[in-house]
Every structure is written in structure tokens, then in C-alpha cells.
Image (cartoon, rainbow, N blue to C red; front, top):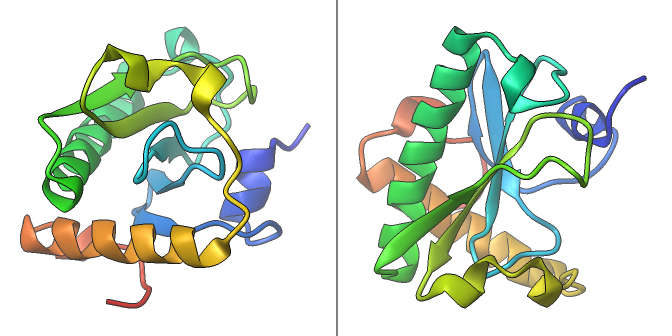
Length: 144
């Protein structure tokens, strides 16, 4: 069964992409923990991180590290949080978000963003930071 993330990557559902390469994508969460909360998702549908081959997992972690550097830079955050939970969608995804404290990892505080301009601005901000960090080759097209 096709996952919601595959539908997003196929363009059937909207998303604010910040990273695209042949093996993975990254796009903003529609219900962020903090501004800039991004999901790193492999293009191949794999339910759990414990089931993915090591090479693809390593690639996704490299993308997550780059996105983490980007969110830290874009939001001047002291840390970039990383979490793999896997309960929301049966498709491996890595949560990366700027963090100022442990409370930023509480999904009870995640709320859908209703103003799409907020997501557009966050995506532009992160794309700029990723370009400044030298990841131009994988930054998704978009404004900024």
C-alpha cells in the first residue's frame, strides 16, 4: 500500500521540500514541534529503520545531519534534535528540528500549521541555510 510520504514525493499531496536526491527527500512537517521541523524520508518505502539496509540508513542519516546543520543555522538554535519514532506513518522518517530544550521533543505540542505562508517562509529560510553550508546540489527548488 502506498504511504502518505510516497504520495507526497509523487506530487499527489503538497509539501515544502528542502532536500531532494536520488535516495531521499526532506520536507517540512505540517505539524511542527518547532519552526523548521523537517522530515527526512527515503524514496524507497521501508516501514521501520530496523528493516532498512545499512547503506540507505547511512545516507538518510547523512541527509539528517545536513538538515540538522541547516536548522541550527537558520534558527540560531543551540541544538538540532533527531528522533525516529515511526508510529505516525508506516514509512521510515527521521524528525530533525531546531531545539532549545528537551521539551521541544514533546509531540503533544505539535500542531498543524494553518497559515501556509509560515511553512513557505520556513522552507525558504532552511533552503538558504543549506545553500550557505554548501549543499546546493541537493537543495530542493523553491524561492530564496
